[in-house]
Image (cartoon, rainbow over the protein chains, first blue to last red):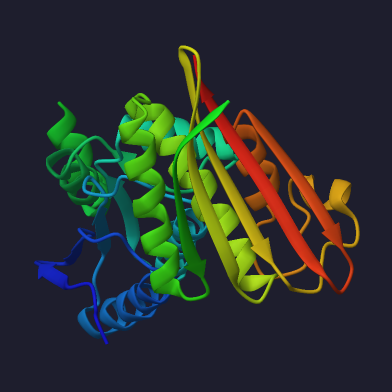
Length: 128
Length: 135
């Protein structure tokens, strides 16, 4: 079966969704990611959806589920690159992705993850 | 109101759902809808197609491109022969679900389209017609 690749970068996992996902593929990604988080002890997951031109309630729910499940496994999730038209449609659909952190692009998303997983004293020092 | 083009697609599998989204996107692009409107129409189509598969046991989609003077529209008709919807008003309410979803499909699709009508008879099936006009 077709699978969405999950890349490892240090203590983070990266996923770039580049296909028009059918529902089984989305569910497989959810399962694969949870397995990889456990296996690699990842501290964060970045999901880039800049190539997706549609996010319906099913995919939206899958993204929310991934963030919630990853949280339970002690990993943060950031969703990056959501297109403006997709964001407008999602909110009108009634889905505002509560509990999912977002960033405009991969670079900012990575920064959110790295800042978020540093010890508190280092985080403070860096801010000054 | 003139029908410029009609397409018929099966809506039974996951792959059909992806193809339905693509066909609806093509129609919306051809009719000159803005990117945001295209996205809304395709998302509504995706919600309705999934309902047809999950609740209707599969069915068919008709995608029509309509013209009326300077106005154009895309009309989506989903037909299934499933168990039907017992209470249409309830089904359109956000958060109401008989399945495992969020219950946003029908109500959400109605918000994303100009007009959405449902005719359903228990044990005979459901027909959903959704239109989005471009002024």
